[in-house]
Length: 325
Image (cartoon, rainbow, N blue to C red):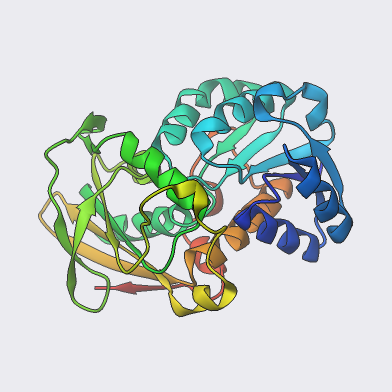
């Protein structure tokens, strides 16, 4: 089964992914809940389509599908039903979320997925592809790594879908990984990080790397931070936001993340990854991940990008660089 299903294909990022996947010549089926938007897109792309809601998904809706790539957020509302259906149907599940509770769900379902021969990889967009590979890269620079801090730099306007997902992340509360356990960290404080242009203050926030970083590196103590500039995080009624930034706006803002690792002997290593804008990066990375999985690069159970595809996966997306400090 070498067919890729892109669910949520009529959304801002899903549409870019569907266009990219068809340009690559992949066998694509697009899917979603809204027939009025889905049918014309399928006609434009020259691909098949299937209409269903995640919570009303019949097994036959996944007939012939090898990989389901989910772009329909907030993922707290779609991932559970789609993961469960994929496990039953023997279909590998991928998505682009940063919502930590979806990672925790995939982690809990990992054994069941492995038994069914299905891979759950809910982390094939920006931030987690770059930060997961960066974490593995930096961890290799010290002996016996004990502590990992990851900070994201978010600049430029945010899409409606991302804003809704960030609301889910904030709603999960402040968390950290301490001695291997994911625990509440309500007293976590902002810290300074240098993305390459001098230290800036970053606020603690519970991204999915608190789960993926643990599985990828085995580092027992992990914390996450974010530096938001300009109009990146909107206020008011999020449902009224535009789909996302224009191509010209995406070109203005590149994306960066920094990872710091401390070894058992106190040695500190820090590296920065820089990519094209996150909204440009995500469909490219997600489709490349799906292409690789369809090609046989897969490990049943819950997985992370760096473990599934190797430490260099993030840098396969053009315009990506890692700088060591």
